[in-house]
Image (cartoon, rainbow, N blue to C red; front, side, top):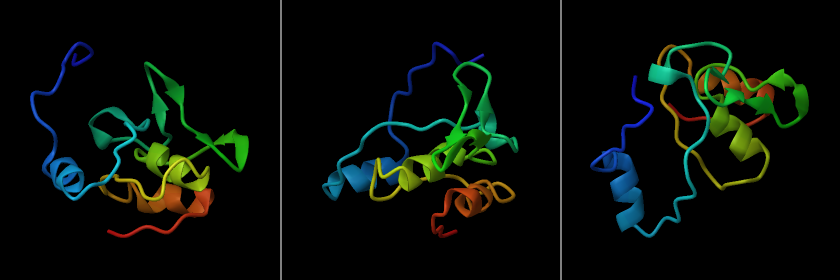
Length: 98
């Protein structure tokens, strides 16, 4: 549905981080519409847990927790629709803030 969509503007939080001097690395894998429990993207495949790649990172924002746990970034952003960032924080061994 949105595979060819290119946003015309950054999200407010991304814009504020950029203005503050943050180095923005890219985007991470998550469920479409931030709604799912397995971090299994239909176009890019599952987000793997960096501690055990046979396991998923968990919930819709698993990519944020996996990137942080793997040491790819100092912090990451995610939504929290019913635990979307809290659930993957546990198996990936990261802290989260809601």
